[in-house]
Length: 333
Image 1 (cartoon, rainbow, N blue to C red):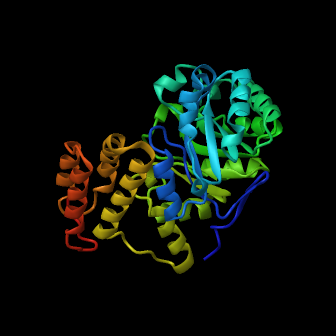
Image 2: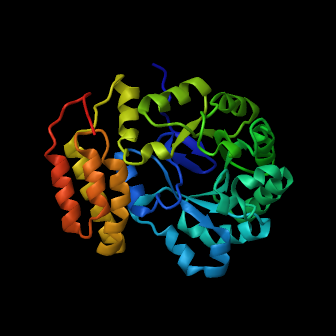
Image 3: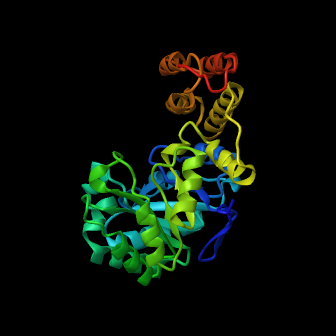
């Protein structure tokens, strides 16, 4: 088997390997990043950080950048649409992370409605101005994350990639779907191979990475320099370790219910430490919706999690999960 998990260099930053946790709004806060790092992610990003929020609200938005020594190296993802504002934001956050990424791929309406995210794919000249301005404002490694285009068929990813590289971008991540597809259909991984052939900077792949086999297949089929796991890590941080095991041994172990219970308790403890009990209980309920899958009684656990009000309630649920007999390959909800 060819070696596809290997160190990745982005400008001055050298990652232990080339499988990273993607930025996810409302998800990739410090507790979740730490969970995924413990499971084997070599790198992680903050949630998307609003440039307008940084400029106008400062301290409140900077709270999204809260980190810890175990949370490095750290990527900070910014979104906005004005080159000068993005440059100012880059200067503001430079001391908080080890790499800056500009989101040019988010498809959600409240982001593209401001002209940011994937809306920028309609304006390649503005993309050039943004990368140029931010490159001049920071010495940190600078990357962008894009989709293939705004509408199906108007694939501008190679043009955008060449523009970004020419303006000083150090790497690019492509989610090979158009904005109009949102998360429907299938990502066209062949576009990653096209992007890789067109550029000399590292190309990261994203999209439809839900299993270790998916991850290994993207790396081997497209030749991309690394992968960014997003939705596939929700309730499934083990995907990072499973991918490493698959690469090294050709197989990996399935997650036990005991391991699921342990990770929920660990995740809860991290939330309590960072944000207190009330926020911790509210946040972990969302994650239990993802963790509680693939075993007998999982749907009932998810239902009860919705009404949980305390740490005691959550721990009762983890004990219930822990008590479920293991029947590998025959799980039922």
